[in-house]
Length: 376
Figure 1 (cartoon, rainbow, N blue to C red):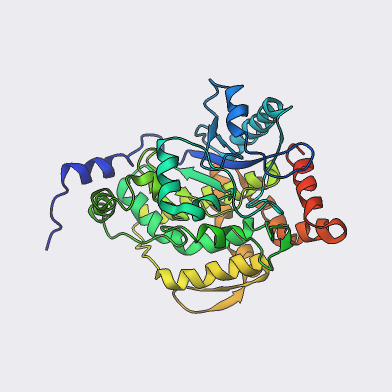
Figure 2: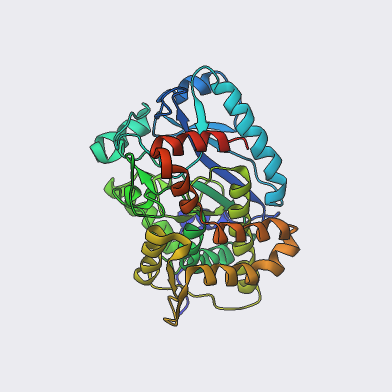
């Protein structure tokens, strides 16, 4: 039986994902503003933004100590690297006298609850989620990729869900929380999980099903729009992109570029397979969640359990195999060198690097190191 025709709303959602210039990539990174002396979170992001009121690259977020850099789309992540360096430098200059900047998934010693920005949207979140909202002092790296065909984009989204834990493991580098080693490669996912619509995103069989999910959120009042669709990947209706939201914000530009390149190549590789007629399918969310826990707890030192076959292997081996698989696509995209640099994240896990920094002076030393790495 043929599927029923899409409603006007459903068709408009699908049409937002049609692109004349596919496989462009954009980066957003959420950054910490720290007190220049104590290196604790400094809830004065709006003061920094007031000094650059017309710069569309810099945005506010829910936490008052968070700033976001949002770069426009480019053909390759390599084109974004100098733009990200410049944006970090200019934002750090704007913050001078107010605070210093750092990149990580979560602050190493700040109190669990912090100050939130005001505004209609943020006030509504604060009212609904109370202390849980004040605990969302988390910082992520988001990568947007445009896919030219809406149905291919939907297929890619459904398939890449099972690769999200591998990207999380690659970017896990925030083991310290409230001044102590959490024992996790990244404490960020566990804090995120205090909110709904977090973690492994649901699969959707059709655009009608996704549109109905958004309509349900509006009609019930559970979430007013797609901006509160907070999963670790999503189909972003405003930009018409496949958005990967799972990695921690990285300490350095180089690590950000490496992870963003992996994400870009992954979407491009899946899109090419779907366009060639391969049925990508969608793995069960609960199996993906097992890998998500391993990535959170152990990072690249954990294990990978294939969500379809059940085969298990070290996460590091799986990541190297994934990079091997994506290498031809990266060459076509012109980012082979950046993809290869991601192997350093496997061989030198960033969570362990942070633990080495903290070995003598604890979590305060981690904050100081993050600041020193920000423009390095």
